Image (cartoon, rainbow, N blue to C red; front, top):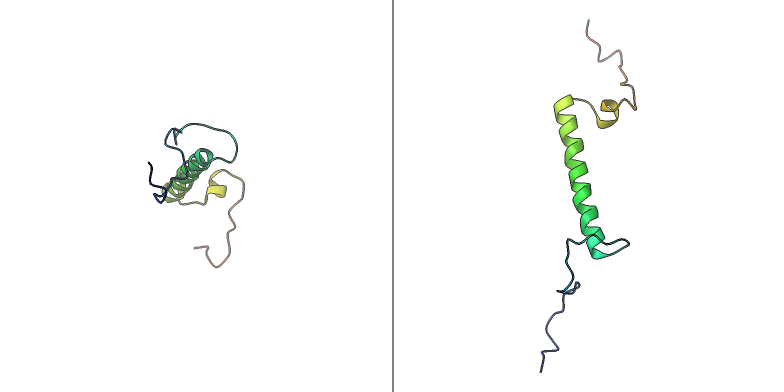
Length: 72
């Protein structure tokens, strides 16, 4: 006899949580989160080492120089 009050996990223990499945599955959301964390950390590192925003680094935006910030 099994305990019916025991908490059930959302993912079956037979399913590999690191497997690559297509669609809106818990595995796909785990991989999406991992890739998002890698992208976020990469963007922060680019900004730290280049002293520019990520869009300026890629050349998508030209930096705006104001007269108040220019030194003579």
